[in-house]
Amino acid sequence: MEQIKTHWQTLPMGSSLSQPDLLHQLIEEAEAIVIGIGAGMSAAAGFTYVGKRFTDAFPDFIAKYRFFDMLQASLFDFEDEREYWAFKSRFSLLNFFDQPTGQAYVDLRQIISDKNYHIITTNADNAFYAADFDMNKVFRIQGEYGLWQCSEYCHQQTYQDESLIRQMAMEQSDMKIPANLVPYCPKCGAVMEVNKRDEEKGMVEDDHFHEQKARYEQFLDENQTKKILFLEIGVGHTTPQFIKHPFQQMTQANPKSLFVTMNQKDYFTPHTIRPQTVRIDEDIADVLHSAALHE
Ligand SMILES: [Zn+2]
Image (tube, rainbow, N blue to C red; front, side, top):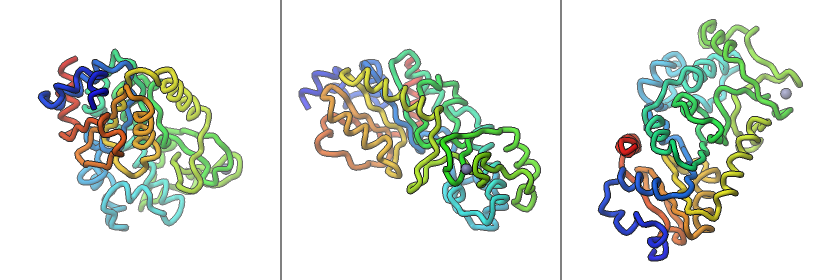
């Protein structure tokens, strides 16, 4: 602990600071910041998967299938591709093409605007773009709701057709899009699906994905010996292999680094990095908003 404290001047007085001040100071002090963003951040920005936002958009699907939230609905095995795309077209508009600006994302952008940072996110929504982030500093490791892939994964290429998505949303009836709007793979003829990672099959990863990955890895490489802040925001335990575990391992590998976790849930932290861990457990939106007022 003492050794870490000598690296981070903020830490000895950390307990006397408010959580927004603590976050602000640590970001000021860091030489590099790697930010991992999970579903909790989008929920904090108002992009929730439950309640009115969900029930307003999908009353017919909820009545038919008794879905309790949008996550369950989005993973559902629909009866055919016309119904799948009736749901997914509306879902893509709501969570990608027509996604409004989220205040928590704007606040985060402000906090880190003049810093040396890079972002990795498991969120497939369009919140970073909507909040005007530099997309060259964002790595969407779990795909994007605005992209499509062959459902048979026959080739590594993604596709996007916003106007067709809008047409599907407009022209559907009884939770089915017209058969002639169903998109098919240009190589093998299988139906297309939204770009996403499957536990067994993986994900279609094309040049766009590999460029993002390379930029992220280059940032890690260039900054690995510096005083790095690994800041995870709203990262749960659904897919810890993408953010939580690598952040903890990289923290352990660099004694000058610090792991800051912003989460109201207290997830397990390995003993070895507890002296290098700071937990911020107040409301994510409130902490980011107050911290942004410093800028
Ligand atoms: Zn195909």
